[in-house]
Length: 283
Image (cartoon, rainbow, N blue to C red):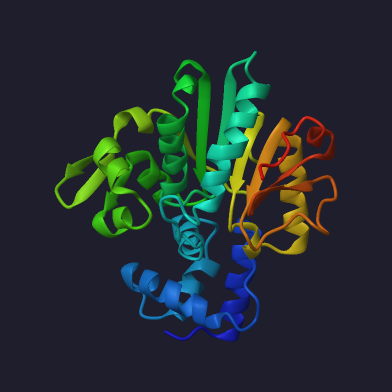
């Protein structure tokens, strides 16, 4: 199913307006590969026919499915590993000291896809910080896709997903087998609040956050949207809190309020006035 130029421009604008994802000219193949299967499932003979139907109606379920189909849902348990090592060795110990009076810890996994990232965080906390069981620990997991939100809330994964990044001891300890799938234990599912959230729109009420994972998300946004999101993150981050971006992402030349903090071979971001209280990076 080839996409015509006029239809490509319509879809580009719809996706940018609704999700902030930017599709540059030359990405027609991406539209075709991701939307052709959707068009067939919805009963259309061509992308042109599906787009014509979309043009003739207000925003509805079909428009939402198109936007969800264009989002990238690549994720694994303990993806890239280094951010989780930094979380274990540096960030959580630092915050345990800073928050020992209030005994609260808020963590947000933004654009969490099917949930492997927030569940990795939950397992890490349970494995290495048993003292936090008596704290008020709140893990928030959000994604633009209702399908991904439902999958995260259910916490079920197939064998291929389980095999990608999840150590066997954690599988046997925190998962239950259900036919060909594995479901994460109820005790971890209860740790996480899961909800649909579009980063390009109003975020609604959010708790002030100690740690924000927003990895491999802003690479899909234009400069203006990156600045908007970083401003909102700046307002949400608690004193002494940490922002973790993807390895290819940065706040440089976007929001000068953030400073990069190095921990061994990993790094994250804090606001300057928070740096005075930050622990010295480990050697």
